Image (cartoon, rainbow, N blue to C red; front, top):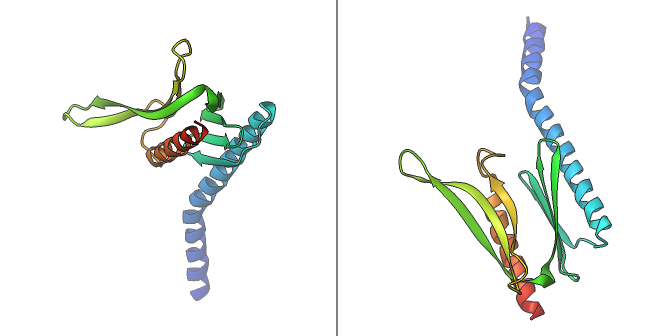
Length: 160
């Protein structure tokens, strides 16, 4: 009797734990792919990353001495890569795009970090941190974009 209870209990615990283990393994694999993709992209652009961050469906990396930024977002199996030379810009700012729900609430739809150009003939560049087309809810993107905006603006003001 006791042996049967132990066996049934062990099987039940194993069945309940399997989804969590699989989720963890899948996330670890996806993180490794994102980091490898960022490192390869940085190598292609001849920069050495001094810091990077993975959040949601993107990874961002910065070479502080050279003032160069790499940003890679992933949607399904497609990567979108952006390389930004921060010397070409005077500042960055966060753009929040919201829509009104049926209940008249404002719902965040997109988050962009926009780099403002020094010169009028050059256009501003935007990188998309969040879009409801690719993710249903925020998972740290708002805090991440705020931190990167501060870091980048501090670097740009130090260069002046």
